[in-house]
Amino acid sequence: MCALPTAAVVTVGTELTSGLRRDTNGSEIARALAEAGYHVASLSALPDDLLALESALRTLTSLHALVIVTGGLGPTHDDITREAASRALGRPLASDNGVVERLAALAGRHSEPGARAQMARQADVLEGAALLAAVAGTAPGQIVPTPAGALVLLPGPPNEMRPLLSRALEGRIPSTPPVRLRCIGITESDAQHRVQPAIAARDVDLTLLATPDDVEVVLFARDGRAEDLGPAAEAAKLALGTSCYSDDGASLAETVVDLARRSNARIACAESCTGGLVAAALTDVPGSSDVFEGGVVAYANAMKSGLLDVPEQLIARYGAVSDRTAIAMAEGALQVGDATLTVSTTGIAGPAGGSEAKPVGLVWFGIARHDGRTHAVERRFGGDRDMVRRRATATALDLLRRSLLEG
Image 1 (cartoon, rainbow, N blue to C red):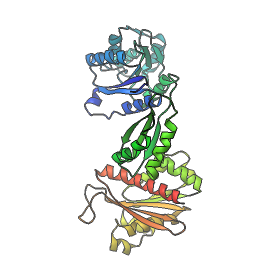
Image 2: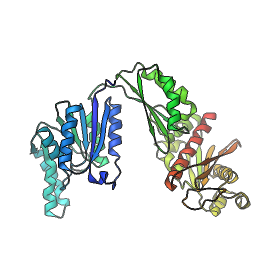
Image 3: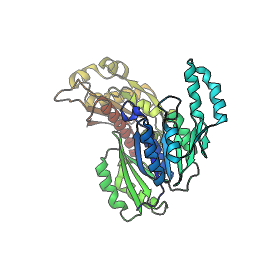
Image 4: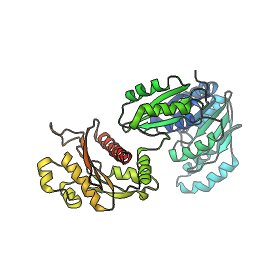
């Protein structure tokens, strides 16, 4: 049985429950709570419905040490979170003078008098609440005492929510962060069947998070103590083998950049079907300029020949989507700068363009090294165009990682 304090997350907005907007806040807050040492027992999305939110908050605040609500703190008619919390906890709302003054200074950006007046709603604070001053946007957050612990109200826009979430969780409880083992090239079920026997003797809980790009194995200290977590993580990593690319939550691109830096390698890429996504992933990593030379997006065959020196007769004979073309593209990328290792992608992302011999989802990858070693890898991905491109990007990065590990 889990001995950690429990928490609940509620995201508010009819745009979420109607599918008009994707809920990213819920998963981000749940992850932050887990890393702070809470067991997240409930995660839900509710529409802008005063009675539904009031009822949910009354129940959740009686059950959990921490309840975090995001959304519904703005100035418009459907921002009902403050009122719902007030009714659920029996704590009246009162206007905070400091927030009123701050909002008054910002009200001039609205042209409608009614809109300017509505901004003052964001100054309504529950009795006994501690304010979290807005860092971005205008709505402050609030931390309100509850019978079981605390209720935290946060604004909905992610850039406004994120800094206030960090402040709300500061110093709440001593905790042992979970260990996050990120893996690629392995299914969620296979990861589970490898890891569970390896950690069976440890007082550790396991959960798995799968995305189209990778699988994350998350290990939690069951009683909040760290004694078994380190040995369990080592056993899990051994069971996962080379599928595990990081044990600290680092992304695949971050891992590649770090390995290249430690290997004194210089990387370049030649992309067709991924359209620059591999280069974008690498350059998203701070400090990637230490190891990344650049990339060439050669979509048309003429560009493959003109920019990467892929022979026209090779494309004519084997096709743009082939092992020969993939290797030639990777070799061509070696000549563009001072790269010592390159990867290429060429495939059929769909939805059209496939054939019986070369179906949608087929992608060839080329790897070339400065010492003359080359090889090609074939993959066949399911899903729509976006999914194929995402999976191809992750595979290209993983091929770089494995090549760097080989030396």
